[in-house]
Image 1 (cartoon, rainbow over the protein chains, first blue to last red):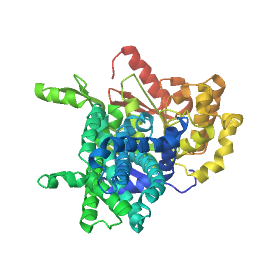
Image 2: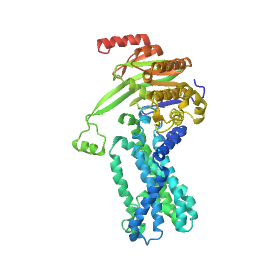
Image 3: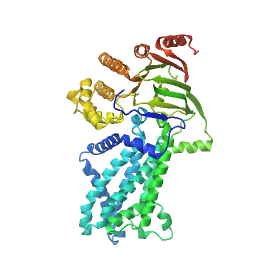
Amino acid sequence: MSGRGNLKFTLYGGDTEPLSSYNINHKMWQYRELIWNLTAVDLKNRYQNTSIGFLWSLLSPLLMALVLYIIFRHIFGREENFAINLLVGIMCWRFFAGGTTSSLRAIVGRAGLVTKVYIPRQILVLSNVLANIISSLLEFIVLLPILFVLLGHLPVTVFLFPLIHIIYFWFIYGAGLLLSALYVYFRDLNQIWQVLTQILFFCSPIVYPLSMIPASIMPYYLVNPVTLFIGMYRDVMVAGDLPSLYSIVVVIGFAFAAYLVGSVVFNKLQRRFAEEM
Amino acid sequence: MSAIIVDNISKKFRIPHEKKNTVFQHIVGLMKRQFDYEEFWALKDVSFEVNKGEALGIIGRNGSGKSTLLKILARVLYPDSGSVSLNGKVASFLQLGVGFQSELTARENVYIYSSILGLKRKQVDGIYDDIFDFAELKKFENMKLKNFSSGMNLRLAFSTAVYAIPDTLLMDEVLAVGDETFQKKCQDKMSQFQAEGKTIVFVSHSLTAVKELCQRTMLLNEGRIVTMGDTEKVIKDYLAMLQRGTPH
């Protein structure tokens, strides 16, 4: 006996494995150190392998915003705060696109940790999305002075940003669970997802204003959760408005639904991960 | 007291006639009505117990289900039916150095690998020097792993693993690597574990190694337990079985 008193009795297999989300989150909490280590590894790999490291990840959204600004300024340039809305939209989009796309490979890309050792496998997705939210936070922090210069002030409602970002994180984590599990079985999902995200990019009010959408298709247009999130970020960071209670309830609903579907599918499929890799 | 209780587990692998792993192939398969796959029972109705402090060997021919059984004990594979109870902290060494990152230093990797094995940072701080002393790699703690030789890599992984001090060790021939000195070191460590009352489950093709380490051995064939008991006797049965070329 090791004498450290961490003697546990684990029952599993067949139908005895309890599937409650409390159980899984409890198990993951015991591995919090590993979660943080994997997140750090992810960030280190991301930034150390490029010559100017972190700067790149900031340059790329700014350059993208610049290019889109130059192209679309003649069409939408007269919209109020076009440039800053574009920037906020792109930052918001990048968290979603980056988080979901890198989640695809979260399981398959760490085959050793799936086939050779036991860890709660949700950890691999969680640490990946955590690395993405840290990148995203840094991008938003750099955005603040730009916001201040372009607007002339910072709206007080900015303090609501963390709340929205946490809900957004929850939504992306749920989507990541679903995508990473499906990718084990469907290896062309990355191509499919690439096309889907591209379509979604143009179905979200990033380069054009929401007012451009005809009222007749608006209800369908608003089914896209990313649109709602972008709207809320712009409310609190640019317009200085409090987001409507309705939109907060709806995005929490979206996040919860994504998390629920993602968790259930992940739990079901993860039993055969080691065989499929 | 039992460290491991395996109750009637079965494991079925599906071997499709044609491996489909893209959406496109699944759609084509649906249209052509190809649902057929072979079912293959890697394990069938396996039950046994391992007592605390015991070293159990598992032997059998290729494809007899040894590795599948060990992977189920390691919780990497899920049984299709039956249940497994594990008492205490289990560490599986199906492969040493899982999760090693070549771009990071030896020091960073020790912390990562330990956290995979379930250790807290503070616990690693306490054994950190022992790990590097045992691996004889103190000089290289700040070197990136990509500059390590495979032998150094292995020594680092093994040292980290043994200092993680689990109650139960699951091992799949990982000791069959490395040079003579290192193997000797590993064997000494295993004997020490036994003396400390750790439970060991050891899968191997090396009958000598099994004989040396395990008091009790299980012989698997085609996913079923043929016999289980005193190591000497089971090995004799196994050799006889190999000679006949057929199972009991």
